Amino acid sequence: MNSDRLRGTTVALVTPFRSDGRLDEPRLRELVEWQVTSGIEAVLVAGTTGEGATLDSDERARLLEVTLDQVGGRRPVLVGTGSNDTRKAIALSQEAAGLGCDGVLVVAPYYNKPTQEGLYRHFRAVAEAVDTAVLLYNVPSRTSCNIAAQTVLRLAEVPNIVGLKEAGGNFSQIMQILRERPEGFLVLSGDDALTLPLIALGADGVIAVAANEAPGELSEMVRAALRGDWETARRYHYRLLPLMEANFLESNPIPVKAALALMGKIENTLRLPLVPAGETTRRRIQEILDELGLSAGRE
Image 1 (cartoon, helix red, strand yellow):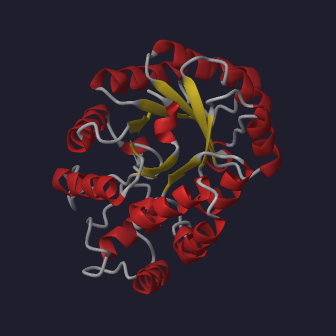
Image 2 (tube, helix red, strand yellow; image 1 turned 180 degrees about the horizontal axis):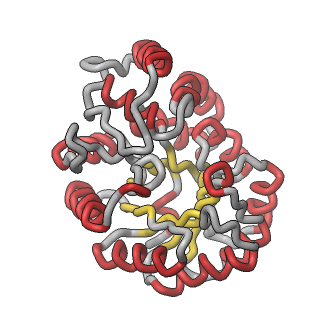
């Protein structure tokens, strides 16, 4: 896959479940179609926002199959395949590649707390085991593990490691990567609210939570920023900022699933240990949806 196809907005798609906990395939198809027709550049399934950690192998495969079928080649489809067991990450990545995904997103190993050399060998082993594109995912708040700039730059030399989703919030580290990365290596924001400043520094887009609720406007913000139309980009940024912030009032994807349920798009069903948003969060989300004209029947 040409990495340029991932410049812009990738939606970190929620996984819709029925009230009995099963995958809601009709709602999934509706969500995917809405995203594609709203203008996003790519779809990511089974990531953090997609509750990938609680999907079994059959569910992961079906989730990808339905998404690929609905997208129909119109956009790249990525899959979260990270694990703190390198063997499992390889197996998940090989399975996803075999089903036809365009790339895999591999999070830094959590809990184990590997050294930088361990991180390098982990990601390289995954990349060498598949032919598809590989994106690194740095999110220290969830993994207790930071992929240092020099490690990212070493991994950027591996042919099919095409980019980084960066959610560490360390601007010094991100700027070092942006300054020294090889040509064609993507840096994508993993924090919606930091997307605009990161693009100003040279980043290539975002893998976004808020695209679930506002795919058209968020995509327009990113495209405006990428073409240097900062006035338009700032206007969208400040309009969407309350939504971006509300999506993290509780652990992701609790708030975004509450929002999509209030919008009439999914059932508000999560898998334990996640539980639905509290009343205070739901009220705040409803206020924001009303302000943005995204409440049920108005989007």
